[in-house]
Length: 135
Length: 273
Length: 86
Image (cartoon, rainbow over all chains, first blue to last red; front, side, top):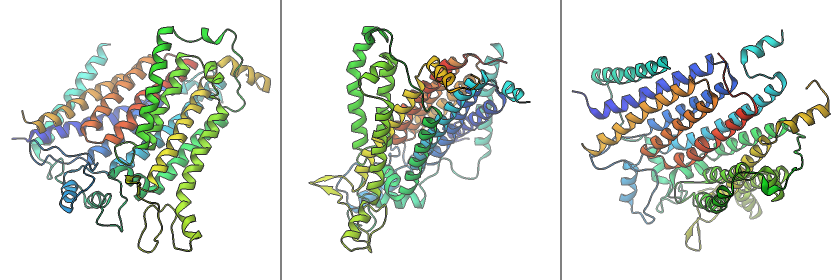
């Protein structure tokens, strides 16, 4: 039969993919600028979650979960270090996602100020009306 | 209303049934994987290794050591991108001034119950944020996490008291720009300090170096009076916290100027507002 | 029920609820309610990061996506329009 761990993991991956699809639909087909900004933040957060899911590993036994990448023993022996390297999750996607969150935040901040300025000039945030204005 | 309930049910059924189909058919490989990749294993082994002084960073927190030492240049350019976003926003809002308050300052804002509770919790939030930032090389945390948590405090004071209260306390746009510049200069100086020490004592050294390496025997100390500070990591976390908190405060101060002040300034400048 | 099946089962369930929150956030006409649904989805993601053993990301994500993003977008909504037209 099926392995329940694989089934639940596949449910998680597929729901992230559906999240990507829904937020892409929100960016393209909704006419309000503010709704586009909200959908863009959901899109970038879902892409970051994908990267962190890739770094997870399988449980070694039923009661031995994987460890976060923090060493708790400040005087380790060689064997302690090898055990730590085999029980811990992947630290590299977490470091890259940290950078990605900051860059997404910077772009969103700038987009918010641009939307404010566009509203002050054109008195509307509807993309179809702005497209009709300048000929 | 009904169409949205139907849409939610359809999407949930689609996900559960389709993943059952995929998991039954077998994927050919094991999900989730059994062990980490070889590159990650190497990073985990050498981040805190007292026996391997050539490559170690001497920080038991592996993610912070990747962010500020193994991949330090990535973080430097991320700070540059954030700096450009703040500068762009300040340039789009240049010249806006807010008017003087019309009533007494203590009459603005929400009720006295909310103000008293805020006075108590603001100190606690600042203490937790500083602890997260300064312990970033020992526990999960770091500069950006502490800075983002400390940026919640000006937002709370802005909404609950008023923006005139912040101005009388000295938190203005120019003061925050000065603090942000101080943080960025600190980051730049910490990146170059090992190079300066190496040049002054005549030995070989690199930019962004942390611990001594085989052909560049200069570095910042990893232990200070018995406590672990991991060389340049502690200073990076401290300056990054100042820079990030001040940057967010600038954005909130610019976003809270009322629209009638903005239009008054734009009409004075001319143009068809 | 063994612990590993329970934890990964909770992860799958949280994924499903985040799909519901995203769908409600994208198809809602009142913009203030859309921001609240987006904040609910961010809280679910933060709990998911905690279960995936990534404590640094939880400490970044909770102040940024649950505190600062909705605050900035609520400032923006207050200065522009409240409702999205068809």
